[in-house]
Every structure is written in C-alpha cells, then in structure tokens.
Image (cartoon, rainbow, N blue to C red; front, top):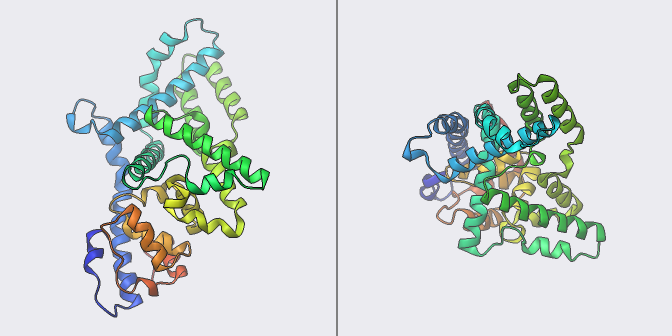
Length: 323
C-alpha cells in the first residue's frame, strides 16, 4: 500500500484488482517484517557505530539488560549473596547478549517499543491519552462493578507500561509465556558455575508466573467483557492505541505484536486488511487511517473487499496461497 495507495483511485476498480494490489503490498510488508529481527540483531551487535544509537535500538538493548538483571538478582537471592549489586553487574552483559541473540525476544521488545512510541505520537498529534482513553474512562465509571474494576486495572497496568518504556524496562512478569520460559531457561543454561541454584530459580519463577496477570491479558479480558460493544474498542481515538491494538488482534485473529507493527510505516496494507477483517466498513477504516496515517488514502474499490477475503489474505500472506 504505502505511497502507492495514493495513486490507485481509478474509478470502477474491481474487488479482484484491489485484492491483487493489497496482496502485493502485503507481501512487501511481510518481507520487511521477516527481515526486521535479523537486522535488529545485527544493529544491536554493533555498539560502537553512531548510526545505531537510535531510540528503538537503545530501548531494546535496555529491555534485554533489564530482563537479565531481574533474573540475576533472583539468583543472587537464591545464593544468599549479601552484596548482590556487584554479582549482577559482573554477569548481566553476558546474559543480556544471550537474550539479544534470540530473535523472538527482539521481535517482542521491538513491538513494545513501537507501541509506546506510536502512543506518544498520537498524544502529541491528536491529544489521545496513552493511558486514560475516553473508552477506559467510560468503562471505569460503569455500573457493572466487575467491568469497572477491570478497566481500572487496565489503566494502572497501562500507566506502568508507559513508565517502563520510558525507563527502557521490561518486567519478567509481562513476558508472554513462551518468552518467560525461554528467559528462565537462559538463566539456567548460562550460569554454569551455579547449576543447581539457577535451576531452582527457574523452577520457582515458573511456579509463580501467571500469564493472565499481564497487561495484555487484562486488556483482552476487558474487551471480552464488552461483548456486543467490543467493536467500540476498534476506534483508536476512543480506545487509545494499546486497547485498540488488543481489540484489533482479537477481531482479526492476528498475533498482537504483528497487529502493533501493522500500525507503523510500510505496513499500511496489513493495517487496512486487519481492520477490514475485523469487520470495519470503509468509512471506519478511513477514520482510523486519519489518525494513524493521515497521508494515506484507501484505493478505489476497497469497499468491495469482503471481510472474509481480507482475513484470507492476511492468513495466507506468509505462504502465498491467497487466490
């Protein structure tokens, strides 16, 4: 899509030609996403190059260091170290490097940094609060006490998320389950001089971990509690970027990190298809683009693209089986 979307306004453009155009743009976006993680790994391995002192790169490195420090402090506690700071300092870089070498960690940290960056950009450009959106205000004031309490928990977790991002932090408890297990396993495999203690820390942390307590889990439950009104969360100006991203990934049946990255540059086709697959009509999709990509216009004939075809294009993009 990208710039090309501004140049595809021929009257009478068929649904098939719109699909072909979007399929091509989606394939280009997939190439960008598939190469992003190896490129990030390369950039993060080159500390001394001024070009790589980018905000996102710095945030990703900071998040991996923060994860390493949390794990090592738990190990120091297990070892009953009196002076834990020096123990952690000596080991954090090696463990952080191990995490940085894992493209799954890089991809997740990248999505989080982009989410916070876009939320701040929307606040600056359109006055959309990154924490307390109009929808969250409404839900927090709901007569449904359970829903109101859930909304307040989301507000609190979102405030913590933005604060953590400013500090370049990523709490262990906020990792998706598969990454949490990978992180704790990295501690065990890296601390070869304390194998039993590292294994004990890994097992203890896994026993204490509850993925449903994560910010994303809380937002997911809140959207589900809205039932028939859940579509209201698909308006970024009303829901705020983070709740909007959660509702979008649920409605379009996409991974949340991918849904967040679809909001960024060079992914306009994925965003348009995701919004259509989520059931939004052309005018609603255009409204979201006004906030997220005001310079982009949808191609003529986009309104003829059915939601099920948009979903099929998204689901088949990686394997190229959409027909």
